[in-house]
Image 1 (spheres, chains in turn red, orange):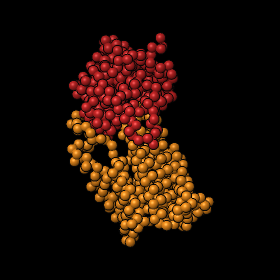
Image 2 (cartoon, each protein chain N blue to C red; image 1 turned 90 degrees about the vertical axis):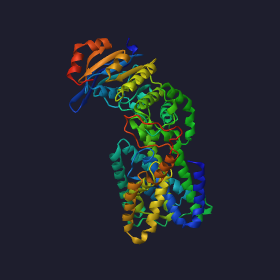
Image 3 (cartoon, rainbow over the protein chains, first blue to last red; image 1 turned 45 degrees about the horizontal axis):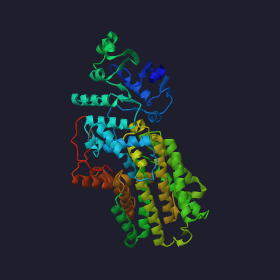
Image 4 (cartoon, chains in turn brown, cyan; image 1 turned 30 degrees about the vertical axis):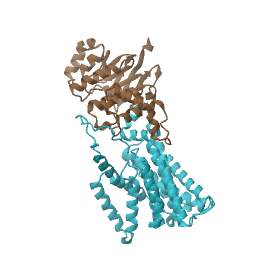
Length: 251
Length: 329
């Protein structure tokens, strides 16, 4: 049955100078599902995320992705194996056009990025695919617009298109709807539902509305440790979870 | 870069020695190449090196020594100088690249100071006197470079080749990744780009081309001195780049011309030159923050209607400019 899990952690620990931010976390992300990581502020969600994506090195424990131990791999290396993350603050290349943003991901996937002697025109072979991806997120009209000029929601959509260009097996999304108005939240939720088909998604999310509509499985963290795990129905009725949310920050 | 700009640039280069003193123009070209090489790193990769004089001056010494003592042909001596610049760049880069911002700048400065110390103490550099009497020799064993016009066109060819290469690197798939790293390093990393390797490659390229400029300068003046490896030269190349326009292809060239011209026109008034250059710099920073060329580009773009606007602190939806504003510099 272990093969059913695309990503697993075993007793993952991260300590910062005597403070334990992540305490023996065991995560099991099942292939083909949307898995949400929730918890009150300071529960260690983002730290777990940074550990999984290798932006931080764990103090102890093991991370297994697709049956490979990636505990000591670098962030660029795991990206090449199809584990792609997004960031809490929308993460685009601001002074490049939407098309160029997506093309950078296609370029990363198809190689040739060390070719300093070839003209930029060779990248145009990615244009059709890039336009297709922009279309998938509803940005085809904005292909030639620098990312910095896009609205917040569109930047998020662009980021998703860029992530999709890598054809990820596992997408890790760090608070995809953070800082958005209700309207944008709806649009992005719908978009995520669409792009998650045939992939696995692990997301950190504050918005419980989004979690309840999207997530197949939810892990609740509190003070760096797993408090509960299950479907939305199960965790939302769990008294410990209710207590953690009421006693902690308002989500 | 635009074909017409190339034609104008080449035409100006060909005509210049008939209007201006050739040695002066050669100096302009050497520093322009140096600044363009530096801009490849600061403007297009976002790395501030404070040690580029080591590549410029180090190459000048090695090239001078190779021509004078080993009797190498001029063209090989210059290539050797560039190679030494690149090698030093590899050493500097490997040690500094994992550090960010000010720490990166400080490590490059410290390493450059070591090179300066070596230049000061080594017997082959001539210490305080510098390495004098470097022969210009004959190009490919045929063209006499003692003739200042021959020398000029040789230097122009080196400059244009170096500048073409930089223009190509900036435009290439590799250059696109460098820009991505400058724009958003964590994102580039998360897309699977080995950021450190790209930075190191850019650093070595920049150092090699700086070495090419330094070696050429040594042949032009038949002289390599401590000034070439001094930290003030590292500072000057930063100044040139910022003055002309960071991250623009022509900016560093304009900046280099401005600074070198100011130095030479004002040399009569002695040490006041530094004060005047300092004031020029302050005025420029206050009036045109994007540098001469950067500001000009901004104005031109404004005229075509697409208002690029300052980076917005996300949150508010931003009105969308019409497509077709390019996005290339």
